[in-house]
Each structure stands twice: as structure tokens, then as C-alpha cells.
Length: 104
Image (tube, rainbow, N blue to C red; front, side, top):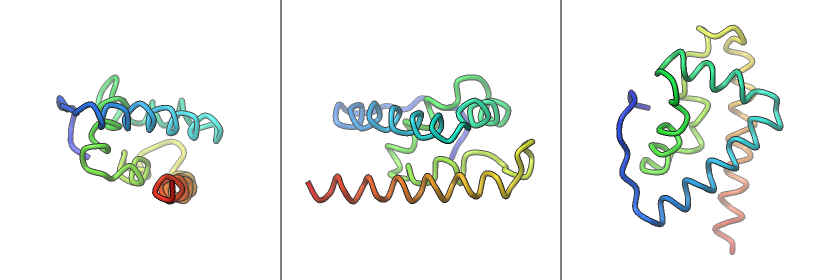
């Protein structure tokens, strides 16, 4: 993921972004890591990084990597093992949701 930048989305992408934002924040909250994830993003990229990273993931179709490529896991208080587990959970959840959406 790149550094903080402006992201222009079309109307369809805006709807996908709204859905992804809710889904991802709900996932982080359910797993009790929203605050830590956001804090680590802000340390890596600056305040408010979550919003542009979500938008960037819509443009690049890589929302499954929102945790795996968000920040340097080893440089966080939680460490690599912790974020690796959360990343796997997100990837499994996201892929399941994506398949269900495609089957509609």
C-alpha cells in the first residue's frame, strides 16, 4: 500500500467502499483489535490512514490484504505472530464474503 494519497472513486466503487468500511471495522471490533490496528496505521502513515487505505484497496482489488500489508508487524507492540493470526482470520472472512456475493 502506498503512502497517503488522494483516491478518486466512481459511484460503484463508493458503494463498495462504504460496505467494505463497515465490514472491516466490524471485523476489527469483533476481534478486539480496532484501536490497535488504527494506532499502528497512524504510526506508519499518519493520522486518518484507515480511510485512504480502504479506498486504495477498492481501486486495487486487494481488500484481502488490508491487514497483511498494512504496517510492519514486527515493529508493533503486538508483534508478528499476533497480526499474522488476525490477518488469516480477515482473509478467510473476506474470501467467504466475496464468494457469497458472487453466488448471488
